[in-house]
Amino acid sequence: MTAASVRVGRRGAGASLRRRGVGWLGFAPFGVYVVLFLGIPGVIAVASGFFAADGTPTLANLAAFTDPVILKDFWNSVWVSAVSAGVSAVLGALIAWALTAARPDGALRAVVDSASSVLAQFGGVMLAFAWIATVGPEALVTRLIQAVLHVDINGNGPFLYTVGGLLLPYTYFGVPLMVLTFLPALDGLKPQWGEAVATLGGTRLQYWLRVGVPVLAPAFLGSVILLFANAFSSYATAAALIDQGGIVPLAIKQQLTSETIVGVANTAGVLALGMVAIMAVLMTGYAALERRTRRWQR
Amino acid sequence: MTAAAVPPPLDAVPTPRVRTRARSGVLTGAVPSAVTGLAVLVVAGALFLVPLAAMAWFTVQQAGSGAITAAHYAAILDPAQASNYADLFTGLTNSLGICVLTVAIVLVLLLPAMLLAELRYPAARRVLELVCLLPISVPTVVLVVGFVPVYQVVGALVGPDAWTLALAIGVIVLPYAYRPIRANLSTFNVVVLAEAARSLGASWPATVLRVILPNLRRGLLSSCLLTISVVLGEFTIANVLSRTTFQTALLLLQQTDPYVATIFALGALLLVFLLLVVISTVGALGRSRRPRR
Image (spheres, rainbow over the protein chains, first blue to last red):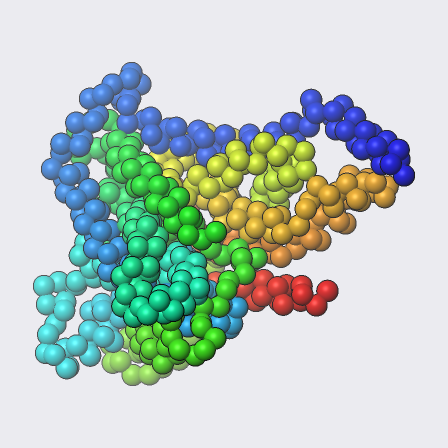
């Protein structure tokens, strides 16, 4: 029996050795696809900012970052993303905490998970419609607020179609994203830790201050970064609400479809470069926090 | 698509979670009391339903007067008004075609690469994971800057048809398609299973088709349904490359007939919600069946 299994094993190894040379070719179709539609576009997107209109390499395009309109776009993108990420993180964490009382494999979790995914990841244009129907001119909540508080939120023009108005839909998809990303961290809190604190005579406040908050802090900050990155790179909702520029993703589209207004070539590439730089910083921070978070989830 | 930076915890096979309630009934640790938890969830749920309810309310409003009417729903099927919605149905058809092609990309390009890495080249697994998760951290609108010149070439080669977008959207889909399959692969030992099948005399095609793929059913289903959701919600690429898909047609229709646009938006949100419920239910069914075996 031993001899047989050795023989089988050796035959298997021999077969795979013979094919090892050509076996790698199995990755070729996927590899070619990824190079053509992820590699090349990615390189073009980041590198095109470094080329002049006639194709010679240059750093002159980076002057776009001193253009007041573009600086304003970046500032708008950053503050809208930061505010919506902060608000979403607090609200989302609260909801995630409330969800830990429900059975992890129960129907409630399944429904909340699915609903959160829809709103957080697949909404886009459709969430813009939802908010137009809610706080747009003549919309339901607009009239309600007017009737109860006698305030017209669209008194200075439609609020939703401004950069600040983006806070509503951005928070609306930020909160569910927070629930999705923060819930695993909450689930990672071991009941034994709570029991240990209680056995030692600690109160729940002490549990939160000494155990809960320190353990959850990296996960919370990591989620805030993720929320920021998500809002920062979001395009669809803003495009459905705002016609002209105002935030960086809209400015990129504007630059791609119209002539340059900044006076340098390949402005879209320069803007993309700026976005990638910010995203790289965010993702590095996220990866570091994620490593700290994992420590408590084993 | 709003979320370029999401690591979706949508795996069909979530890690088992430990219930965090103390047995004694006295609250310890982080778990809220049932009443507090319920109160927070009810308030949050109600607030989150407001915009969706406003959408539903909007679809039954008569333009101008504000009276309740079903006219907007009737208009969709009215042959006399069909021309108003022709673009929308073109977009919807295009998006469904792109769905089919994108699912094909996942099954024909991504899946074989993942299986090959699993069975023969474990070293390639890290590279594959890196590549598949990369689109999460690159905003779609940045990639689009690169897609514009790429699609000038694609357009010259095969024409400007909307279905060509599937190639670009397939890249955006990679993280969503990869995770469920990866999660499913980690629930059983593919190598041992394949060796068992091979030593019983199965050919490689038979091993993959009749032994490995049936074990990947749940991962593949989640992966395909998520792919469909992403394709139906994709807006950025189609918008910048000026192709007509469901989302771009929806936005166009919003200018002329916001009521019908909202009907379709609400319907699409509900459809994706149902798809995701299916994914999580399929996952839960698989989990509850497992211990009985």
